[in-house]
Figure 1 (cartoon, rainbow, N blue to C red):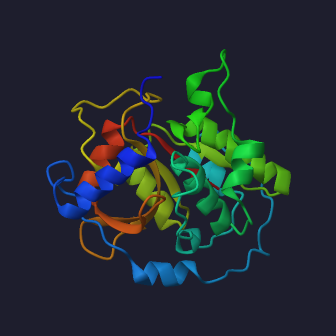
Figure 2: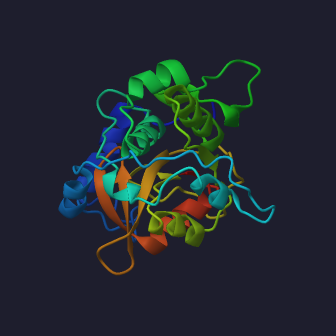
Length: 260
């Protein structure tokens, strides 16, 4: 299948190259570091008793997807409560699942990535739209794109009886994604493993499978000038050069998922 994710051994080899500084060309512009302050904030608990179902509120036709999605959540800083959730060693191709699970936990859910795969993630069959399902096996190889993750997330929220919903934000500008995080809503963003150079120089069409495909949770502007914060299911909390993050987002098809 075109665009299959690299296996665990290859991923670890890439990590080794990064650790040795041998992948500098492929990681040009990416500044990666842990964020102890964010980790401390994510450990805090928060009261979700204020969550109210506002689905009956009148929506103007001019409202955007992001506006409509945000109606179901109270104004809390969910980005500060996204936990550090690492996919290795249990689910080597499950970055999307772990990113989704981290956001669900930030909303106050006791989500489990294995339950998400078993009960909510649409898996591929012969006649399915590849973009609408997870193509492969999250435990070993494969890729999942925004439509499949929206289905999985909303299936979980519906089962839990919660009013929040995920929405496909593919095609949104980078500024729109940052606006979501400024409002306290974390965003699932498709990029590359270790923020490496993807090897292509023109933006891919949306819903294209590609080598090094990876999904992270965007949390907002970084503590250092010109950076953004994210929770990477491969590496944990990170701070990345904002211009490089934006470039990768756009090159990889401008694929994202919002929640509200």
